[in-house]
Image: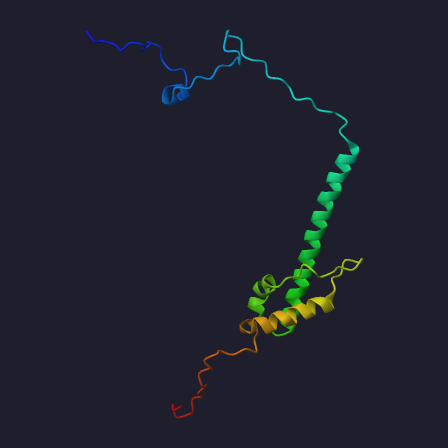
Length: 152
């Protein structure tokens, strides 16, 4: 015959929370009865506030327009960078290093190319290793040409 400790009950836990942590969740907040607590539905205004909806739509439109303008500015900056001597395979990474937030966009959607050229020129001076004209700081190996006799 086994002895039981005082206060132990012979009921099985109904949930994992109860078996692991000893926590019992009651459906009714008052704790009594078998009826679950009613699930109240949130009150929704079917018409909504037209001014708030319009304000939210305008904010989203402005964010998307700014993102589109920035994408156009980056494409133009990449083209200007390759024209100014930045290595073509590095032009995209080079443009990521530049601060193009102050570049304006005209009403027709075209970015200010003179401002972009100025920023790219300053970036090329700051990061000369990305330009095609920059050589190695250790110099370059001499180029030897082979003569018809197999000698250098």
